[in-house]
Image (tube, rainbow, N blue to C red; front, side):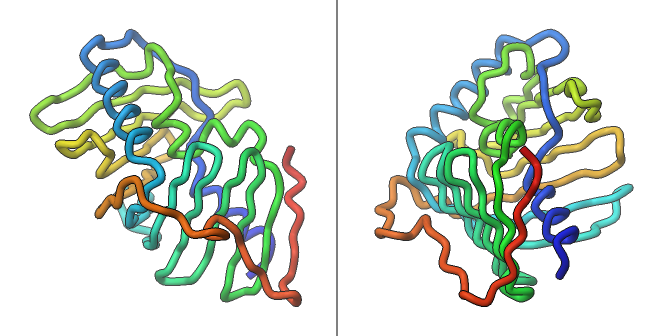
Length: 212
């Protein structure tokens, strides 16, 4: 697997650059405050995930695994199916290891850190939460185009009775929808020493991401 494919797969972890758009809904804003509080109160936690990418309504890719979330700056995505991969975030630096291709991509997230799914859910962006549906436990976030020309986005966040996200749908004008299904939260877990580290074989191909 070449560097471009690794970076393309890494990009699927990122949502488009965001700024709040439209008028806020007070009920929706309060709903999101409770979602953020539930996430923070649960850390460190583990959660199983399924990540799906749809193009024009057709499923293009599905991957699954486990997320280990220590805090906003320390997150590990362990992809197990269909291929074994690891994405590790430590502060503003990341490592992305494709076990099948024995390739490590590493670099700084830069402005992309604001676009990671957990950062989007935790960041307070007044005006972004535009509507909510209490019976469905759903809140919609509308995010206008970024300064770099990225398309505007809409997020649909479905939560459980505990206000932890169970499903997040991200869509934009490019007809691509990314869905994250989150299941089996294990809250306030004890993390073993070195669990948020990444061991890579000495013969792994290393790709330095030039993005700032």
